[in-house]
Image (cartoon, rainbow, N blue to C red):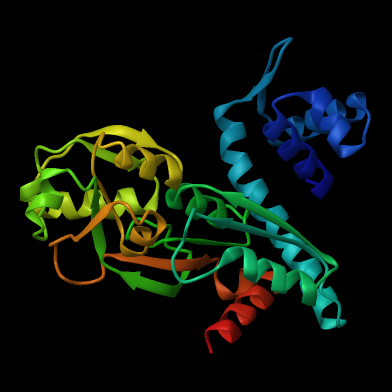
Length: 294
């Protein structure tokens, strides 16, 4: 099994199309097809279901994709490690982050990294914490700034960034704002909620708090960005339970302490692979983060 076969396989799996994958890889479509057929012969099983419009992975293909991405990530890390020993940091730094993550200013950190390591290509992907953890575990991201949960893949290495309580945001005319007292999960059981998609960190923290209290809640308004959430609350269409630092993003809203455990329930971390699998670029970025915190 050759590395180029795995590279070709991953490209076709990502693009779900032989022609587009061939164009991205700068190889002929016939050569790409021959490479995939050679891999299928070696493994003695089809890896793709081919149609005239697209290709999809078979069950065997899905299993191979996980391992192929991990192998290619390890090869990339090995090459970059050799370059780092030679005094040159090159290659790619793939970073994932949630929106408005506490404990790190991602844009400033990446800008500082680029100034120090201009030969490294920076790639950034924004998403929910659950998806980002899977991307790091699969080797598609070097690290991610995310919300920490017990369900994160065991092989990931969390580095603490910040911890803070959750806060209830509501319109100033809402009954909670008029009452002015910190609400508990039981006080909020019948409210209309604005919240993020289930894999986002704040949503997972809020779901966990209500589950621990034995209170069911329904998220009627589900969004995938912070400003949409704040806009909906600002129009008095619902309330939101969010990390405490969100209260500074919309001064017109009323912010009330969320009476849960009284302890930081929203913990943000940098998620990295095991030490031996961490890329030189990721180590350099974390060193900058440590320096910024000093």
